Image (cartoon, rainbow, N blue to C red; front, side):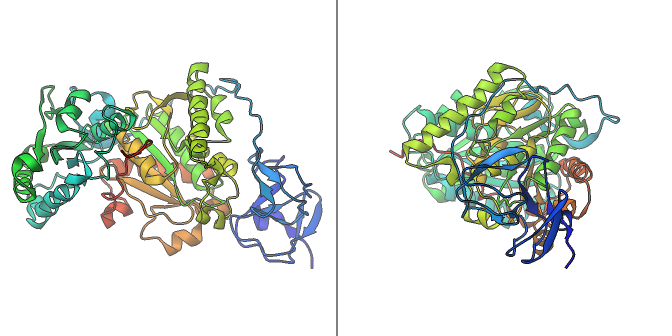
Length: 524
């Protein structure tokens, strides 16, 4: 049987790579030609998995994207399957070379793009001002008031009153499992308050009420005072104290629910008065995330999202990369793009903190690739990270911020979050992201109210199977469509979604259960 080109079955990403990534199932015994020679594949290799294109000695590094993703734990013959059974993770030195590869500023775009959104007025800072949705939030200060917050939202929906206020995109309860058991004014108390404030002040939230129990650690008034909360009147600069209801003061769940419903009804007319106006694309604050990744995430969807991120930044906007444990092993690529050594060192400090943090609990960051990731072809955290950072595009890294910290810089920003999707995206949305893009290879079904979330599939079989949940199919890249073409498609969809087009997750109503603030310390 004549050999067929490797490119019929797989993608060889960089000249120095000693593996290629299967773009579709590679049958056993097929003969492939590559680099002037040919070899036979001894066994079937699934889509997204890696095939050795050179013989690899035990202990030799495995290269993908031109970077080390692990080391061979045993000899691997040419054509062999490269995965967890013959690859190990070993620490290796990385040259951070701060700013050594600092990219030049992007040229002005051929066209400055616009979208239709909500301008909350000059009283809000830019990261809180420009909304893609017009929602009301019911924010629980503690888990003990979570059910009550949900009851208020359910009552409003059951009354069918929102049909009379067509410019209100919904009422969303922001509930969680925290709010007590923290050290008072300790790291978790402050971080939870920062996260709740990020949602209260979010540009997609036109109004909110706070619901507490009354005796919790996260007291509503402390939250208001420490985070300088207040409702900014639409089109104005005046602040007023938000509505606070506590179950103990109101006299129980029923009375609190009644009071909450009354407060929502009273604010509906004002919020319904908001109208979408034409806004420049520089007011997009894009949150990015990947979940349920596979071996093609770093080949298709993530690089395409990187193109879209660059296009947003070229317009003067901001793109946020999160999931620090999924930067681990690839951070040296980002530090070389840092605008200053100080910014680069902020990222390295976070990497070192994560090494300490996981070590305290006897864990390791390489535990991050999940069983589903590995089934999809991802072998090590280094490999996963190299694919994940592709979402950040190619521009300079201008800042590194803490979890849920307001993102105020323009350009490419890193936020320190865990890799767990709901926790990560909660921080990014709290930081001000007014629209999000989430890439997935295995098929994550995710939403993040109040921010719309576009989901991008890495491969066509999954997109076809789960089309009711996926917004974009980046799998066409494996079929010959360019990364730039799909990136432009994602960019256009970001602007359309910002202007009111509903994502698949919004159509399903997904996004209320996904609010999951990060708790880093003990529960007391």
